[in-house]
Image (cartoon, rainbow, N blue to C red; front, side, top):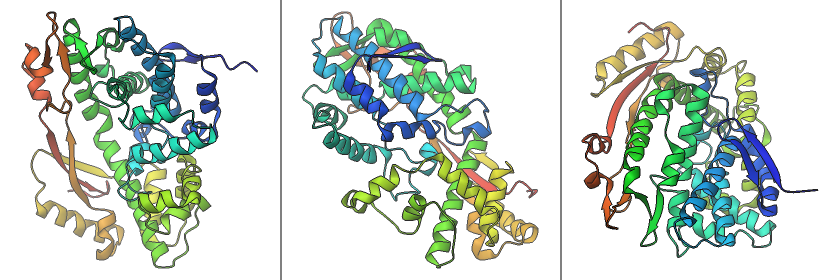
Length: 410
């Protein structure tokens, strides 16, 4: 069977697979699992078209990586076939460790464990299966390869991950304000002092990219309804953990029960081979199947939250630039107890407070985007730009929220 394939992608058109190893990795059950994890978690409850998956995104990021490497090589930077394949593999597998619902449950299935850490474990497991053929890709992923610009193409403030997800999320949500000129940005990529840089004439494309990213965070990733849906789902998982701890039976798929019945850290997870297998057996379908079952659970808190999610009776939310007054939360608690008949001890599942933040660009010497001027000098983006909004984009914007059941009238 030929392993040279062409995939028809709705965003870029045709994506070519020219590597036998990459083809085999895509065919692996671990990677195929990404078909069952939506890229934007619960965002389709706001934007119905946001049904694309991590599988789509990984292929798209790999496609952009190929374009970026060709562009850089065309400017005289030597890149071997081995390096090119490794960089494509690293970006292809960068999200392979995502939890169900993507970022929504990232810290709920495993405690304080980022998906990148799990991706690293999965890549090492795949490396064993493929006879050590992923060693260079893992070095690039972990930023341990001597040529650091490869890691920057995988993970930085202007990497192929961000370029693809902004392009793709714009396309599927229909939020065109987030449109970016990815093709032009890629054409402007260069390497200087072994660092990834942007040619000076690409500076306005980068500014547009950062502005689009800021807009996408407020309109899509941090949309108020999405925040509510994600927080409600986290509370459902927390309630199940509580009930299981109390030895109350809650029906779960085996792999989900494995994680919810105990508190596992990354050290526990990596030390037990079955932990990785259970994790890689989890996807969005397990969560939705469970939530639909729990609608009829005798525990009122769990069943109420699950009914709300299934019927899209989501929490309301107050967003403010200032801290929400404690009197508002107290009033919401009082109304929840009265209206829903919820015990005071269980109000923490229905009245949620916290903050969300949006930072489009981090301008410090360790993470900044560098511009290669016409006279071959390197300057940071803020210094190179003649537009004042770049400094503004580097400002962290925080908003405080109060989530509460929609039936309440505050």
